[in-house]
Amino acid sequence: MAVTAPRKSDQYLTAAVEVARWLEGVSLTDDHGDTSWPVKPEISEEDLPSLGWGGLGPIVFFADAYRTLGERRWLDLASSGGSRLHNLLDTLDPDLPPGLFTGLAGWAVVFHELERVGLDFAGDTAKVVTVLQDRAIRGGIGVQWADTTEVLWGTAGIGFLMLTIGVETVGDDALVLAAGAGDWLLSQAHSVGDGLRWDLGAGPLRERPGSAELWFPNFAHGTAGIGAFLARLGEATNDDRYIEAARRAASWVLSTCRTEGDTCAAHHHNTSVRKGDSIGPARQPWDDSPMYTMGWCHGPPGLGWFFQELALATADAEWNGWIERTARTVRTSGIPERREPGFWDNVGRCCGSAGVAEYFLDLHTWRDDPDDLAFALLLVDDVLARATADENGMRWHNVEFRRDTPELPSETTYFQGASGIGLALLRLSRHLDGDDSSVNWPHEPDWTRRAP
Image (cartoon, rainbow, N blue to C red):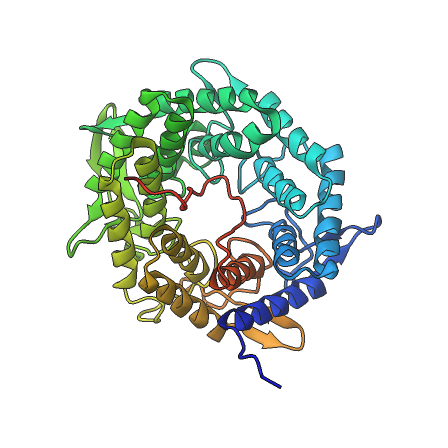
């Protein structure tokens, strides 16, 4: 009898099952029999209802685990988590933030993923989109949410949602709302020479006055993320105003980039003190931290997402070269080796190896370069080597070198915890078996297309 050799994907599926076991073991059951996940189960039972740093990541993970593995056990957990979220939607907290990864908009992503595996949450997805429509702030130019510009918390991220799940759910009304978000963002832009950049917006500035001196060029909180939304909006609406603004955003971002050796990495942030219309340089205490990071949120992978949106919107192959530069930057950076305290101790989806590995899976889908796949495997193998694995399953401890106790407690979250890493393991296992599918994240570009 012939023995079938194990597939390379099997080890990643096995690891994903161990992640599932840990997440199942730390789950909580409420009085209705529904399931939730604490953010830091080693510390408390607090379960924040948000997608990035809260307890909703495991719902998406279990839906994807069922889609990949077909085990009813994982579908039941996803469904039970969705049922609890449904109940929260029925008694919606009016103070819940609107953001894609910090509040209500992220709920639509969760419900949409549950729909993809055959569960009946279409009405919940539509309700989230409708509530976001109702809560949009209208007055002045366009529409916005929370006086916030950026992708993770604010208007650009919700704009991405409207262009994807929103259009699929409520049709052209969502496209109109996305265009309103684009108009508001154009009204908030700051000209710098030939370029455009954005601060965080009046909402964050009220809460954190010091952030008035921060300008983020990268995807999270910054100009690359906003520019990516405007490029996608321009293509969707055939409106050159948005595409031109995205080009100008790229002009400013590239002015901040380190490009020697045919690479491309933008400074983590720029600091300045505003005096009327003038901008003067300033130093802040956090400038002593590493200034060029490699994660998708504040590093080259997020820039690559922006350049891909520009390539698709403009059909200009020039942006393909900039995407290739971002890949070269990461591959030559030295990660995932721990070279100095804090340089690369993060294994998570946000700021860490799991997110970078998924970027290289994006690139492998895009251009079929075996080096991209090899680097993704290198990163994920390193993530597995750093796991805590025991009779309870598999999870990770990130490191915060600025703290007296640098090892952080394990999280269940998408951005910094086991659910996000587990999703990367599931995607890699499918990719190795010839399935390029992924979670439908609204803010991520289409990598099955390439500018001519």
